[in-house]
Image (cartoon, rainbow over all chains, first blue to last red; front, side):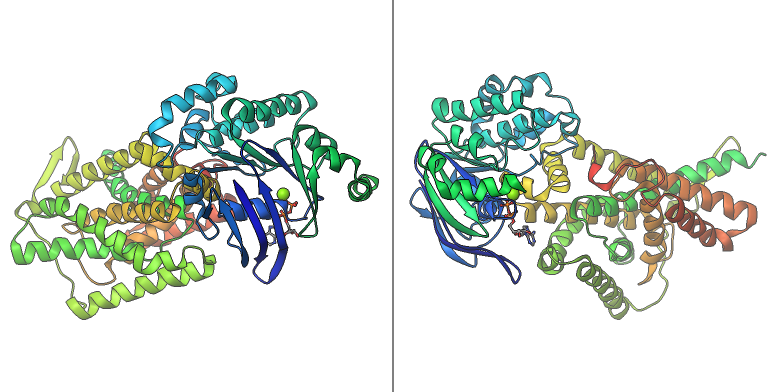
Length: 238
Length: 293
Ligand SMILES: Nc1ncnc2c1ncn2[C@@H]1O[C@H](COP(=O)(O)OP(=O)(O)O)[C@@H](O)[C@H]1O
Ligand SMILES: [Mg+2]
């Protein structure tokens, strides 16, 4: 459903992605792996339209979406949960979640989506009138994913959903990501630095290093790969 | 001692009008992160609108006020589209030069069109003085105050409870996240700018019966508005209200105790003191991103 080909992205003169490529099929869970600064967030931000590519093409559901501003890509069916949750800190949990359904395709279904999202994330109902910045990191991540789902996406992109969370919350969020795919039929792309954790959850993965897509495969293949061990064990040794 | 009630009443009346100017400024800053150095020129345009409507059509300024709302809303949208939208993603320096440039341009357009003469709006009730106990005040002052307070309260309520207000606050708090919700942030900025301009234009209309009208008439008020907004914390609307009352008190009491000539010295001393002691504003650590929180 999503295809990225030959994507070059630069911040001013500073190019950070070279010919990045990836693909996501209907109902797939795909992870983007790679060390810090490899360009994973840049890729996600370009797909959602926060950044404009210098060249390359992004196709979603048979339509070119590169060049669309981000307020339009969400209406096309791509929800993007930014790194570090990025809730609106001084709005309530409920207002945060309701704003998730701002796009014209989702707005008419706002009430129904809220009920579904509350079933998936009880915290949304329990904390509805609390200001978002007063939540714990794990709660914020759940609200951020809930807010993303409110857009009724076909594809949900989550940048580092497990960052800074304890093992119990990591497990919870992992389960929820799986349920989002299994029960709602939404494809999920997420970024994670921990190879084991990511590949246990994902069907397939892409590995980035210094702005290039250097490897991809099913989770089983990648877990066996010597290349993956080189990159990531090297990381651990640091 | 018998002067105290009068000083209090004068402070409140003056503070209400300053609040209306300052609230527009702080709204624009809070949402767009732009300091509008042309804010005072929209006060001036409001004053001229009231003057010409009065001089040519014999329209009462308070009638003009109603007409001025859509006029300034459109003027706000137009000035946003023509002047601000092209620089909305530029650096602060570029934005400062842009709004300063707009300010100078508007002053000079006024000078060319309407000359530098002082003009006065003097409706029949101009000299009517209301006495209440030991206090006395002008009818125009009371109307200006009442309308200013009504406006400010309406803006508060709008920002806090309306869906559009929440969209504006969301955009203020995190523009990228807002865009990812499907919010067209350019349009939000246009709306914010237009609402800010409506506030300040309306303030100009209300001030016309009280102050002389001339091309740089806005400067005196906008300087006060900067002091108020820094006092209250940039982007903090409740702070702007309190800051207005404090600046008005300094002005009223200072003029009474040491003379009118000193009032500007006094509130700029206050301004400098605040910048030195509490650059985040007088009322706590509340950051600008808490707009309407
Ligand atoms: N806003 C920015 N301006 C300039 N350079 C940036 C910006 N954001 C990221 N970078 C640079 O782009 C590279 C890729 O960053 P990023 O996509 O955030 O990597 P990752 O998410 O894989 O850790 C890094 O070298 C980073 O320093
Ligand atoms: Mg990143």
